[in-house]
Length: 203
Image: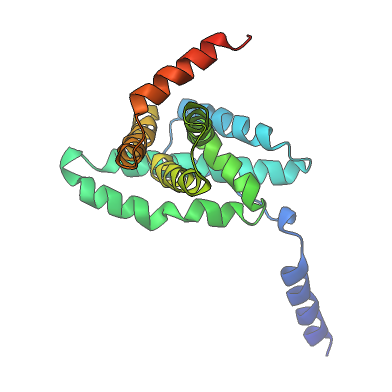
């Protein structure tokens, strides 16, 4: 009877114990110590932007982000230029693990902030620039532009370096520009007008 009670207590504790009590370990095996410190700093900077008040939660989130960088580095290092299909398949296999792991500690808005932190904030900057350049965009057009920027961010998160991350946003900007041109926008005219407005606005 006592054994049964102890087992029930253990199961209840396991089910209802707070997530923050769990510990996410850094997966540093095989990683260069200097690289580990660089990545910890990069991940910590992203976490600092979340302004989490629970120190243990903040550490776990930092370690999840850092572990993601370690995994991406390992995957990209494994394949050469002739193995891109195999590399992309492995990247896709692991792609959704980051958001799933973060969901234990963060809400959707905070997860988006992590994604922005890992992609140099390009989504928000590019979206704002598009709105400022073409103030007459319809709600439908704004929604489509944001959808494509979110797609670009997902691809950019798995890129090997900053050049690769920026590549995806630039690629999707090209797609957006072609789409807007097909809808009748004169992008050169819109861009010139935007630059004039920016120059005339008070600093």
